[in-house]
Length: 101
Image 1 (cartoon, rainbow, N blue to C red):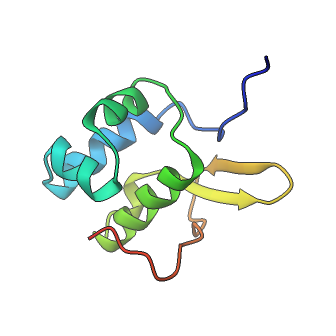
Image 2 (cartoon, rainbow, N blue to C red):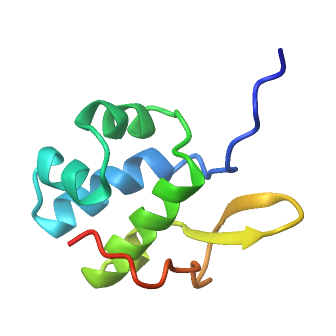
Image 3 (tube, rainbow, N blue to C red):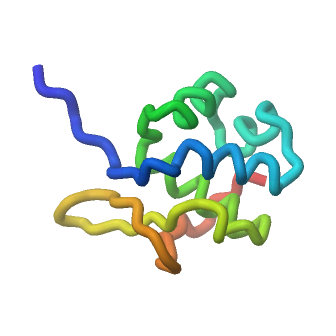
């Protein structure tokens, strides 16, 4: 059975999650809670496992709310090919009406 392709991520994505945690002053547990995931998943993401598209959006939205959007690689959604992580200042689409705070 073929494995479903996840979002494409920069090699620096894992360190960027650690940098977001440090810059925010949150604990790993607090960060996981705000993202609706577990600390185990955060550890996996820091070590190369791809978060799903919803979690990528949640990460970008949280970084934006904290004024730390520059810490994470920008995520761009292309309907034909799915999510791609990009460098530079590309606005990630938000989920209107949802809040993780």
